[in-house]
Structure formats: structure tokens, C-alpha cells
Image (cartoon, rainbow, N blue to C red; front, side, top):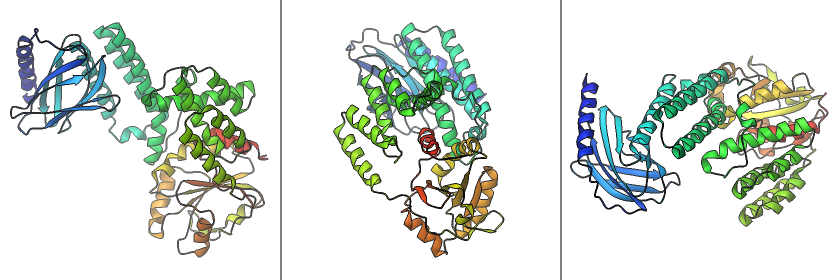
Length: 469
């Protein structure tokens, strides 16, 4: 009843403000005039209201004793802004130059706000943006902020499809101006792709056992990479590039390197092309058979001097690492049954050693990719061994997480009181985890810092050089 009453007050207030709108206001064509008022339930504490553009440029205004604020924002074209203040006051809005905008912010429940933007050509657009946020947040909150990452890949994909469908229907229903509608359709599709990229990473980071369906990334395979680059597109661009060059390499039976170059040749936008070529620098630093040709290609095609100098320096450093040596002994690790296991027990097979810990978020984020890797090479002469570096007082937590995340392969835990284990870590200069090391069937080091399971193309190139029968 109380919220309903406040909504009624809001409607009356909006009607009053509409009557008070000064049509004779002489606004300059390269700025927007913003005048607003905050109507909290109880507090009359003054605060600072900020409008932040997509390029992170901020414009802030202090409220007066009546919680009113006003000011001019330089603006030469219509743009999205994020408006924010204290007490969870936050929303996306759309402003145009040359107009005056009235902003009414009403608290309908503790730290829950209604937003209204009144101005020529932007009133309905901002109503849409507020409803869009309500739909998106409402669907996500129905699962819980954290619980949504417990969903299977199938269910999460359905959630994203539902948001896309409902917001898309709202956009069509409101029949807004064509230019804005076109931009919003693109933003809606982009939002979905960004969420799909982040889902397995966040889910793994939080320690959940995520299973992705075969069609989870289908939309990335048809994603148009020949587009202007922007920061909010970088996740989907990088994922689409990776999936598309892998698909091309497999379909045309060409090298990954050639597939990457083929895709880049078809891109007309310098910044997008530059971003993708810089992505390829990872291959130059992988100490793979193709590393040198990647290095030459990147150095030739990137005009960022600082980047190329840094790349050359890292390449030289990695090239100095000696490989082919036998690893130091790593004995008396314990498995889940508290039985001792030695790394030498696996001689006769390649060993892909994963060093991780229960407290390491990036380690857990690699789990879905590691599972896919184990699945792809099941039955081959390679053993996937994970050694937790958790301390003795966390062994029970380690056992619980192994079961919770349904980890495969051979699961072991190191002994921090065993000098042999400490010497092993120091020998390989392990300064951070996750860290992966590859050994051959004779116990020699194949790669002291193997690419992560999420670096699928790099690992595929490495494994293709091995005799994994």
C-alpha cells in the first residue's frame, strides 16, 4: 500500500514538472541541461549525482538542501550515460544535445528507486531503458546473484535467451525512433554474447561444476568480426576470433596460424585488426614450434612500439629456458584416500601437471576447460595430474572441493613440510598459480610453463607435436 501511494505521488509530481517545463529555455546545441530532484522516503542528506559517459568521462552535480541539482553536460551527439549517487541510486539514461531534461528520482522502498527523465525526444527512450533494466535484473535476481552461476550451461543459455526475447519484445512494442532501436538491438545482442563469455569463467571461479552444451557458443561462429573495435565488444570479438579460426583450420585442414591470417585479411578496421594481431602474440610466447613465425608476423603488423619492444623482450627471456631435462623427484604426495603417490609412477605416459589451490579463483576458472581437455584426450597416453598446494590445515577443504567440482584426472596434494616438494616448486620458479607443466614418458620436461587449458589453440598445437596414441 505504501509503495502504491508513493507511485501516485510520483505521477502527480511528474505532471507538475511537465507543466513547469520552460520551453523558452535557450539551450546550446552542444550541451544538455539537466535539472533534477531526489525524493527519499526519510533521509534529506545531500549527495552528489554523477553522469558517466561510455568513455568514462564523469560529470557530477551536488544537491542543495532541497535535494535538487542542476548543471550542463557538454554533448555533441545523443549518448548513453550511467547516472549514479548514494544509497544504490544507479540507472542508465539516454541524453541528447540542445535540450533541457528534468530528472525525478523517487525512493519507493529502502534503497529502491523510480527514475523519470522528461525531455524532448528522450522521455519514452528512458522509460524503455528503465523497463529494460527491470526485466534484466528481475530475471537474474529470480535465481539469486550467486546462484545463477550454479546453473547448467543449458539453463543459463535459456536465461539469456529469455532476456533477449522479453527486452526485444519491449523494444518493438514501444516503437521508438529507428536510429535508437537499431543501436539497442545491437547492444542487446552484444550483452548476451558478453554474458555467455563470462559465464564459465565466473562459474568456475566460484567453484561450480559448469557443463556447457554443444550449442552454447553457436552465435560466435557467425559473429561479424569486420566491425569497429570498442572496449565493450572485446570479450565477444576475442571469443569469436578463437572459435572461428579453430573452425576454419579444421574445415579447410590448414594451420591455426594460416586460419588466423585469413580472418584478419578480411577485416577493414585498423583497431579491430590491431586487437586481434596482439591476441596472436600469446602464440609467440608459448615456446611452440610456430612461436618464431608468430613473433615475426606480430612485429611486422603492429605499429605500437612499446608493445613490440615488450614482446621481443619476453620472447628472448622465454627462449632462454632449457627444456628436455629430467624433472627433480616429486615423491610422497597424498591422494584422496591418503595414499602416497610419486610423479615417477606415471613414467611411460606424458604427464600434464596442474598446480592449483582451493583459494585460487583463476585456478577454478580453468576447471571447465581442463575437463574438456581430459575428455578430448581420454584413452591417450597422457595422464592429467592435479597437485593442490593447499597447506595441511586445508586438506579437508581440498577433498571437499574435489568432490563438489567433480574433478577428474589424478588428484593429489603437496606436503609443505616435505623439502622435496618445496624444491620442486623452486626448481620451476613457480611464483603464481594456476601453473601447468608437461613431461614426456621418460620424465623429461617438454614444457615448463604449458599454456592453460583455456588456451585451446595453443594446447592443440603443442599436443599435435606429441605422439599421443
